[in-house]
Image (cartoon, rainbow, N blue to C red):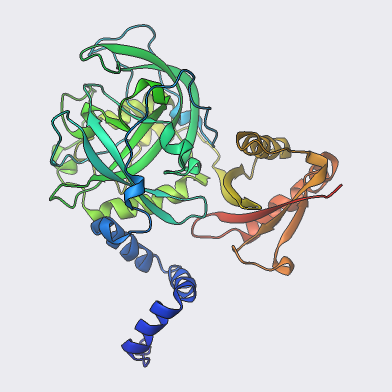
Amino acid sequence: MGSRAPTIKRSYLERFVTDFKDKAVEILLRCCNDQEIEREILHILLENPASTSDNTDASNKHVPPAAKKSPSSQRTGSFSSSHRRQTSHGHMGPNGEPPSPPKSRSNHSKSLVGKDGAETIIILSSTEDDDIKTSIVSMKRAQTEYSVISEHIFDEGRIAESNVEEIEEERITIPRRGALGSFVNVKVSSIVELTWRPTKSKSKASHCTVFYLVPQEFLDIDVLIGSLDSGEGQALTFQEDESFHRSDNAGRLQPEDIVNNFLRNQQEHVSAAPRSAPATRVKQRGEASRTSQPVTAEPEPSTQNTEPTGASEKVRISCRLGLTTFGIRLDLDAHSEAFIDSVQKEFKKRKLTFVQADTGIWLKPEKEASDEDSHYVSLDEDDLEENWTGIIQWLKENKQANSNVMYGVFQLDAD
């Protein structure tokens, strides 16, 4: 049976969208349960960044301030061992830099560049409330085999910290600030995967790149794009499988490809799949050129799936405490102590006092769910441990199937 043709007049819809913007957004959100509609909306955002004026106003443009004497605070977020890579120490030359973070894919397109090599790019990221935000940042291309982004981008709230993932601390080499041809060794412990495109490029192609977060004082710009991520320079040499064909990666990234990947990544952030060892992942990434690899899939060789590994299911809880919002990722197979550790980190990061025995949280399947449809959880140590099994069961039954997202409102007892 075919769908019913709409009977409401276009003029009525235009008036409704103009006069009742919030209601129109609510209806659109309900419609976005259809992934085809969601893809179409994200596709429009990617092709028409200037139309999202609320998120890409002039205030987003940034001239990096002078170097600070102390590094920015360390980021927190969920992570898996797949991000741990072999590290090299000491000064590393052009052929001795550490490998790029996994999953960086980029399709190079030229744009108008300033005299100092700087240009502006548009970054697409998710907010704490799972909305889509675009930000304009400054960028240069660098002769390194990886890409980095300054921590001040996240300190200023231009990109939500919920996008950041922790990795095992390691050292990488980046160009020394203000010293052409010189390098400096820095510690890194976080990465972020972001979708971006040049602002002045005639091409509609977008890029998906994994960046290391580095302290602000090491950069004189917001972002450095490595040679492999920019499509310039030689890639690392890897042994190719016999089944590998160059024609497999001949296609160039298009907006619809990057939209599909963005949706997939949103799900992967909260539903971790079995992953292979770090060294294996680096080899796999090298089996197809990063400058032209389609981002809608990342195949794993069958030889790496012989060992039985259990999938770890996660949910992302978009939390609110007064006017403060932040995200917490919860492994549904973890103990209650892991959840408390995550809560403590988020409170500490925002300089909030956390008294476990006096804190509770209303878990909500929808952002505006009533108390009747919500589940109250006391964070008191004994209560939480006693009720943990039931809490996990409720989360599994009520989390959003499409994105594994849950909402939470913290409640602090007056006494």
